[in-house]
Length: 132
Image (cartoon, rainbow, N blue to C red; front, side, top):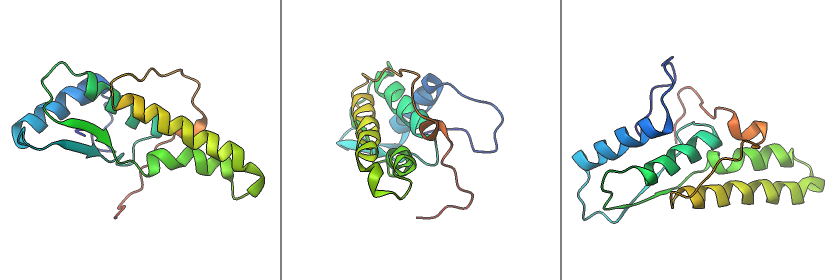
């Protein structure tokens, strides 16, 4: 996704991120490529989901399937719910399913934020000098 750097003080809307992303893809990725999966890149869970949804709603032609391969942006809420305690298993599963369903909807351009996301889903997952 084309997003501003972490140190950038200007906040761009998901629609702006979507337009910049799809434009960049058109300039660099052949239409014969069947699909593109995005990483969350340190965005919060909710921001990653909102951006993916906006990308799939972008009015520009999109010859590729645009989906996600999120790790941190699927796990943060589940890990926060778990807190290392076996007793939190059900809450952990529910938190994970909530994020998985939200991202599946976003991959179809059908996600609507309820605004009731937990604190973990809106926290930035940015880690300076993060490497895979």
